[in-house]
Image (cartoon, rainbow, N blue to C red; front, side, top):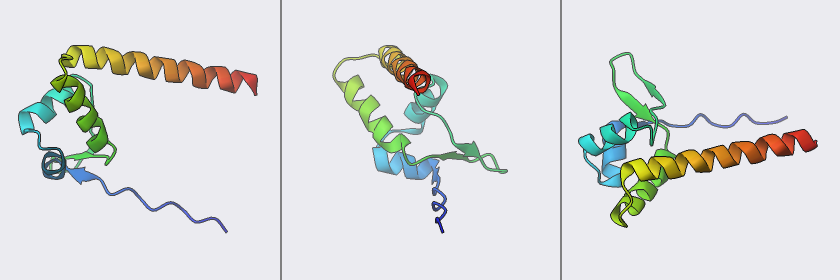
Length: 95
């Protein structure tokens, strides 16, 4: 019998801010630029995030601190995701 994976505990905005040390403004900017995504919104309008945004935000902060603009970082992420998708599609065709 296989066990179902436990559901992921989504993080509230405050949890993300506390874990990463960024401000509401910066988080909003990351979301509006498409660098990170909300997992969902509650009925009351509260934003919830998947825990994987924490290391992603840390990565974005590190790149930004070394001189990359947020637009450059978005381009890096976009190219990276396109390459991953292309590699995944090629592997599927080989099977």
